[in-house]
Amino acid sequence: MRQSTPGGEPPPVDPAEVVAALERVLVSRQFKRGSRSRGFLAYVVTETLAGRGERLSERTVARGAMGRGGDFDGRDDASVRVQAGRVRSALEEYYGAEGAEDALRIVLPRGTYVPVFKRQQTQPRAVARVPGVAVMSLTSSGDEPAGPFARSLSETLVQHLAAQPDIRVVGPTAAAHADILDAARRGGVSSVFSGHVAVRDGRLRLTVRLHDARTGQVLWTTDDVVDPADLATFETEERWSREIASKLGDATGLVVRQEMRRDRSGDTEPELAARLAFYSYVDRGTASSITEAVVLLDAALDSGHRSPALLAMRAALANASYIYGIGDKDAELDRAEALAREALALDGSNVHAHLVLGSAARDRGQWQVAIEHADTASRLAPFHPSYLVGAGITLSGAGEWQRGSSLIREAHRLHPGLSGHTHAWLAMAHLVEEDYPRALSEASLLPAEDGYLWGPLYRGMALSALGYAEQSRAEAERVRAMRPEVLEDLGGYLSGRMRLTPQERARLGGLL
Image 1 (cartoon, rainbow, N blue to C red):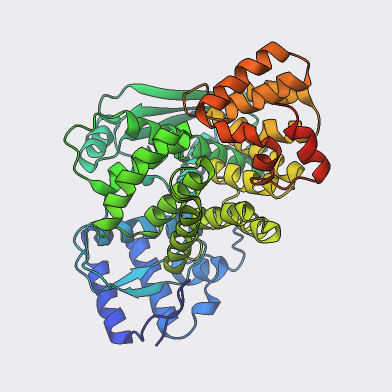
Image 2 (image 1 turned 60 degrees about the horizontal axis):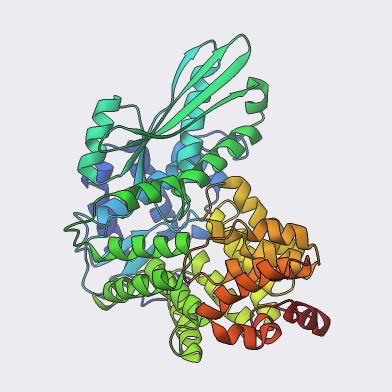
């Protein structure tokens, strides 16, 4: 039989070979103790082999693989999505360890319950470690329904954490705190999440913490009091879980930042080093951070680590090099598009690759193509702050200023810890709208780090429009020291990055 993949159909796969691959997985350490995961995987694989893959939906899997009744409703029962996330994690762990040499792999892509059977085209290797978090099941005390809420919140949180592509998630587990800290240290996970649900006098108090897996130190904590009736609607539970997952699992989130703070002396994992260098660029947004990340990403790719994630990261760096004027601009933009398409050929739902193609289309003045990629990215990752910022930037640059600003502000609501340079396009939107006080307020949040052009550029433009000539000249001198060509034709430079009317180009170009 033939199995479709996002990049096209691979060679035919023998059903007997798929069954043999399934049996190896089912007897593995990762699946041996998980009866639900074993049954779930066996069900979706055999249904697909029988030609009924197109019928695999949340409802049919709930009834066929998990024994749920005909009244199952995924809107208020996340059990199927949670179990699918566990199966994906277990498969990734298996193929990163004892199944690393398997010639045929079973993959359960995100967003579907239909497995894909992929033959290894290159020498198999162990999957490199990425920043991760071990989730302890929330404990409970007090009146009912504390216990059911704690269990439901634990599973929903893990579901949304597992949807964050930049971290690995382990759990939820009911192990003692000391035991999970020890397991996290041995498993290379940098952080541990724990929490408690208490219900007393009709009020529910939810306390959660993130710990350093090596020291046990509390890195972050929050305490919320809600009405249990609100949680009963499921919407509040979903919103809380998504917002916590966004703060923890984003590329600039707490789990990634914790891994970045770890002592890296003697670290020889090229993929992990490349990822962390890219996350540093996302956080800093400077020319030097681009150059540092390019070196490590190229080394990882050249050593055979051509995963969709790393390809999309390297594509993003090529696109950033074009924007910052690093190297041959035309070659960098071509490289960005080629790498992004390679990533999508391996994983058609790679949001990061869509963002790179959207940004490149914006840079080429292909406004509708840029908007389509941005809309696809925001649809695929509606609760991923860094991706929402990327989609918002592309929409803004294509002239959709209100929609773009809305996505960027939503990203800041989900993750207030986003790096300062994410305010750049909000500042630009206010400059376009001639709201110069708000433009200055947003620009004041931009980094002052050497090599970061847009802080002094947008501050200088806003100050000029407000009549602060001396301060504006000082900011202009900082811009000139970094990129003198920008001020030679400011209107032309801006219109090369964004969609401006002739009137807007002339007005903005005359501010400095």
